Image (cartoon, rainbow, N blue to C red; front, side):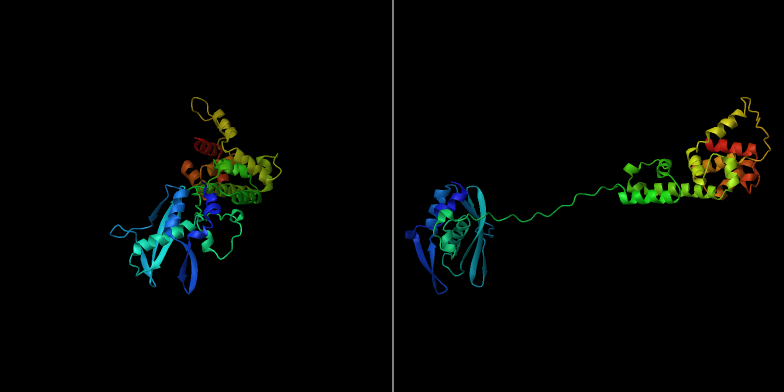
Length: 320
């Protein structure tokens, strides 16, 4: 037999087994636990029941409240287990037997056995009575997935970074590349590294913005704007042209043969020195002047005070 067939076959008991039970000034219809037990055996010969708890003596546990004793238990039919309650007056002479008897009737009703006795509605045709749906399980608490310890930077923050670079006249891809970072896979832990690279690039751009237009033209007449010059300098951190020129002026015997070594450093040499120094973390003017002074052995108050020979040596050091 299937569970859904119980209510149509046993929902309305045979009137011959229905008795009367006085309760609260009324006569209630009821079926004794022996007849209910017979029905359970017909439905499932292997039906079982068990209390939800046992007392210290190993007997079914119950509690007394307002003069009534209550025992909870599980009834299993056709492999399905449902909860039932047995309730009787606490002073019954065979209290446990009475509790078990009432429990069997109550729990069987949960499967549809003699269900008509538990409702005030008249059943004209049990076969067309809708089957009560099984109780819905308690909602399972939603478990939030664990967040990664080092999440990716949000797209909103990436957009803010790109806008900041645009406002400062910088190429955001160049800035990220100088920090050796991939914007498509940027982690939160890498943000300080990106901010530092942005600050250096912005400072370098500010230094070139302070250069007079005619000096910029002398530096490279092909540049139409200061921003173009800044981008070119960032891309030429290696200063390969200047290094090649320095090597060409130093033959294998080590004797320097720089043309006019005592002449003032050119604007191009000064620009390359600044770019290389900034790339090495020597970003401020004071730091660059201090390096120049240490290298030459004299106080350098302006990079324009360096000679071609001195600034060539500085560029070689930064390239190493």
